[in-house]
Image 1 (spheres, helix red, strand yellow):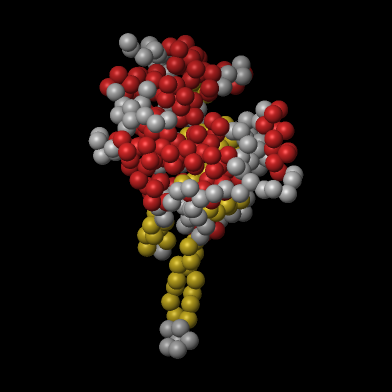
Image 2 (image 1 turned 45 degrees about the vertical axis):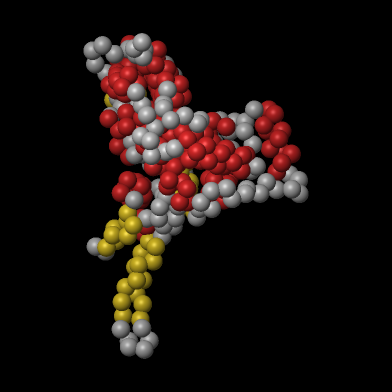
Amino acid sequence: MTSLTESDLQQQLATLGELRAAIGKAIVGQQDVVEQLLIGLLAGGHCLLEGVPGLGKTLLVRSLGEALHLQFRRVQFTPDLMPSDILGTELLEEDHGTGHRHFRFQPGPIFTNLLLADELNRTPPKTQAALLEAMQERTVSYAGTTHALPSPFFVLATQNPLEQAGTYPLPEAQLDRFLLHIRVDYPTEQEEHDILAQTTGRAGGTVPRVMEGDAVLALQKHVRDVHVSEDLLRWITKLVRASRPGDGVPDEVRKYVRWGAGPRAGQSLVLAAKARALLHGRLAATREDIVALAKPVMRHRLLLSFAAEAEQVSADDVIAALLRGVPLAA
């Protein structure tokens, strides 16, 4: 666990502080969203953002790409988008000297470091599956040839919670591929005032470059070295298992949950807690990290019952009941 020295840690933490400050030059407020986004990046996972249009989701990802000096691409998902529009296609080329013809693979927009998949639920399941497979394997297979995606590779997918007409909701098995489900809320009154002042004048918020892609990869390795105690591991295991309806689980789970979280939820919660600990300057995760990340990690992994919908009980309400009903052993 000592592969990360104290001096290394201080240097990396200073850089992470600069990264937050750099994003803050373009993004007003949304501190929790920025933190969860950085946790997803450090943990090597992908994030699903949910929020109404106009809350700065695209600007946030672009600012992150500029601050990290990483390539950024945005794909607007539509009902007629095909898998080849994302992954790439083969072009027939001819050598004018010899007349020889051959196919050349033309990489699609997925060959980037940061990919914003805007309104992922507006595209058919075939295209969704192509993206999610590439997210999991970090490779693209086309015509029998496997092409590796750049590293680091980070997908941020967005969903609009308001308009459900003409959408293709992501199946639970595919939602499980996302490390975090991040909710983007409206800004406070003061933040909204600051947004108006910052975006309607001549001076634009330019984002300075503070980190390279290699530094991100190094931090992702350091996250794995962060310590999680045996007590916390057992608590995470009990939390995830208690989300599945059965005997000995909280009443809210038995009443409102049809299908609980799988083992990947526990893996994601451990990794995300480690990333948050490192982000806060610690080499060991604490109960606070797990409580802070339980909802973003688990809210998209619970399938609620009709009773929950009828009584307007959300996944966050069930997770809050889980945290109350499954205490950490002293």
